[in-house]
Length: 120
Image 1: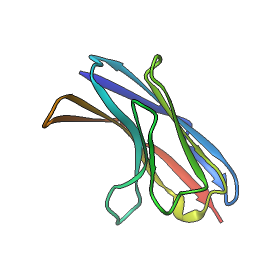
Image 2: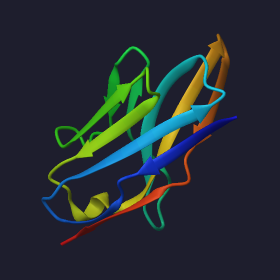
Image 3: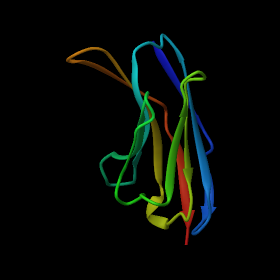
């Protein structure tokens, strides 16, 4: 199994910054990507940012230019730096890890979630 531990969530004022961290452990092999998703009350879980094992990032349009994802493959960690935060960023943020051991096979793992609240 793969375990994902998130940290860094909390309360921040609009315009402020917050940094989330995710550490993966367990049966880690053939990692394709790590990333962050979020879910606000009454909404579906949505992609925030992902980064492949090779370092290629993907961002939701709503966070481009404000959030930056990074990773350390040796340590199996992924961080999300969130700047110029807005009240609409308020959500539970979930760490995600994707394994692709072979073509056509993909496994997804999720952290327990960490609350991020942005006050106006």
